[in-house]
Length: 135
Image (cartoon, rainbow, N blue to C red; front, top):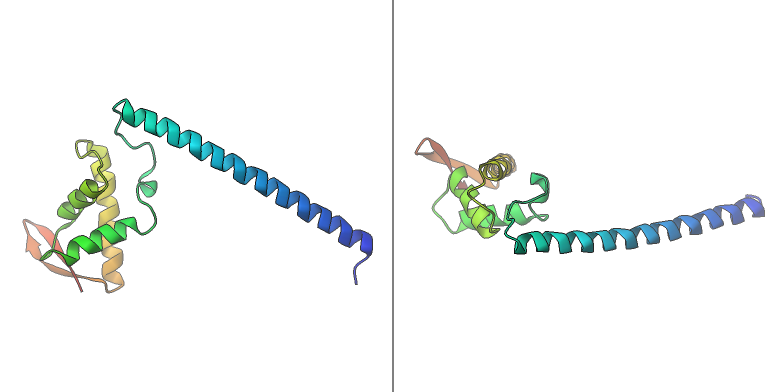
């Protein structure tokens, strides 16, 4: 059994760390609120360009949902059509070529990943683009 002063010291440190974590979580919440306010002000002023990395453009599972829903309700779509669908669904600026490329890259990676997992199958070429369908 450990010495009582060691136990009490560890418990004190544990409580200190819990308080620090709580304080940091409050600061994160406040900072996220500030960021949302500034983002909304930018949107109101007409700035539609996303300021986040492409990995943060989508909420968890959002890209999967959009792609799979689009493919379920169609006779197959290529990556460019899916990219347009994703951008339309999320109301992203399709005139921003850099953003279109980032989304297109994410869609392409997702398609390959879903194909490897057996969710999708590749169809014939249409306009030199591979058509994807739900497996």
